[in-house]
Amino acid sequence: MSSSKKSALVLGATGLIGKELVKVLDESDQYEKIKLLVRRPIELESKVCEEHIIDFNDLHKYQDLFQVSDVFCCLGTTIKQAKTKEAFRKVDYEYPVNAANLAKENGVEKFLIVSSMGADPKSLFFYSRVKGDLEATLTSLNLPSLHIFRPSLLLGERSEFRLGEKIAEKASGVINKLMVGPLRPYRGIQARKVAAAMAFVAQSKKKGNNIYLSHEMDSMVGFSEWRKL
Image: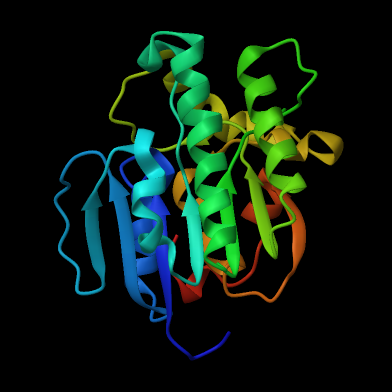
């Protein structure tokens, strides 16, 4: 890992993975400045993090904020939260694509984004189809270094209670042990491990388009250098 200080920008800093990512980046010594683009103020005590309250519908107005080394995108919602498919697609597709374009225009070194297991433009499921469309668009942008993280079931404390996910999380310990061989990518993974994987990969020199599945994030070395898991 390089000892030189870099700068980062995080979109989606209030979500399950985003909150963990901010902690990981803040605790590391890799970034001298971390810009957080948020809709509302957040309680954060940090010497390197600075929050910018913005309107994501007018992301282009904040182009100067994208003059950083790495951009981390953890934006995402649910149909329940968004209310409509159109609103969901705006958050999970339009905002990230707009951010990627701004990152490219500003010469950002790495663009790292959370997608989802099963992302596929041809999927029968709307959620997976939107994620697939997002990945297809991002890979077509020819970003210098694109890193797509596809977690399976996300484990961790959410601000929104989801009964189905709570039940699945309770059972994940046993289920994960049974998921071996070709089933390994479907294992549940802690949000903090996804965040640590993103932070770890950001220090690599990998170029081009890269995709990471849950079991690959879970087995990455170097987590201890970021945060005790």
